[in-house]
Length: 256
Ligand SMILES: Nc1ncnc2c1ncn2[C@@H]1O[C@H](COP(=O)(O)OP(=O)(O)OP(=O)(O)O)[C@@H](O)[C@H]1O
Image (cartoon, rainbow, N blue to C red; front, side):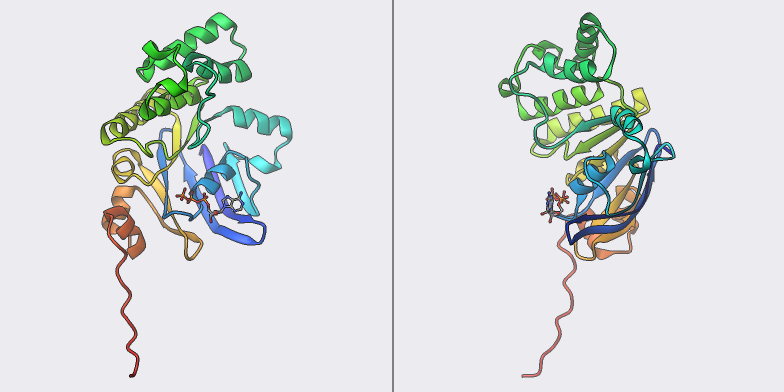
């Protein structure tokens, strides 16, 4: 088991975001974190990468509890994470090549020539090799996402965390990113944990997942988006995955 989450409880101060969150992510799996706006998907991702401390419960990597480990072990675990977050994906003052070289400089012992070669290799993978010397402001939204993915992939992490990778992309750029995510899984065997609202992406790439409910503040379904779309017992989950309005609750008749 690469990643195991056990009875995780997430809070901001007194405010409960989610409780009783438990799931496993195996190597070579694309795992989706689903749920309506504000239910705590990004917060869960931040707990998974060690940016936020759980109020209760555990996040384990290869059987080692992240927060019980010493700082050196935690730093080593963090080096195994590739991250593509919604905001601040790329440094605007750097070229794409420099952006991709940065994690190689921080986390590997490669010399400058080797870093350059590796960065060009990953940029080629995401079909941006011709844009290596461009700055983020000079490329499209879809290209920025692919460049962010290249940066996340540069060190060949066993685990990739993607927060809304296809948000704001047109359907073709979004499909291209989906294909790239599947290619990454195929070629590297990495596990991908992905937060997404995009139904076509969820259905196309995720093998497994969890659905967080904003109202009850705990997960209400586990499984692949396709299984959940067709078989989830909970109407909120089916509605989300069919893009329907939740079934209206029967009105309570009042005496006039
Ligand atoms: N640093 C913070 N301090 C206090 N509350 C926060 C903080 N970050 C997020 N929250 C709150 O926690 C809740 C969950 O936020 P989160 O961003 O994780 O939701 P989400 O499911 O990712 O939403 P969306 O789909 O809209 O991006 C929200 O009500 C949000 O206002």
